[in-house]
Amino acid sequence: AVPRAQLVVLGEPAEPEYADAVQDLVTQLGIGEAVIFRGRVKREEVLTALSGAAVLVVPEQWENVSPVIIAEAFARGVPVVASAVGGVAELVAEGVNGFLVPRDDPHAFATAIGRLLEDPVRNASFSAAALGAVRAKRDPGQLCDRWLALYRGLLEGEREPCKS
Image (cartoon, rainbow, N blue to C red; front, side, top):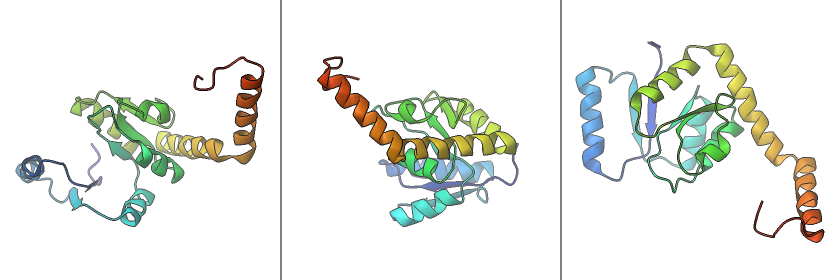
């Protein structure tokens, strides 16, 4: 649907056999020019790749995901398509700064990615929302207000220390 799109794969799966099977599939499908496997790269290279990305895809399979890469993408205005697992849903606002899809549904991933790549207006809107989400979390005034509200609640007995 998006002939000029490229998929840049950073990192390596834990099972080398899986990586081999994916590379074989790419070859069989004749899409080798559209899929680039970069393997394990340094953090700086990840950040550079994010800066030029139209969308970040996070097909995480496990609940113990640490979505730091999502925050990094949002800081660069890159919308996200990710598995709805673990802490991912805490960051990705469905239909606002990205899409959440079932972790084992390649068709849902392809559809969501296509929606962002085929619609520059939606992509720009999601990008702005991603940047806004990061700025709101880092805004000193908003941080101060949230901390003060927490402390007031604790002092007034409205909240337990470890419950939101």
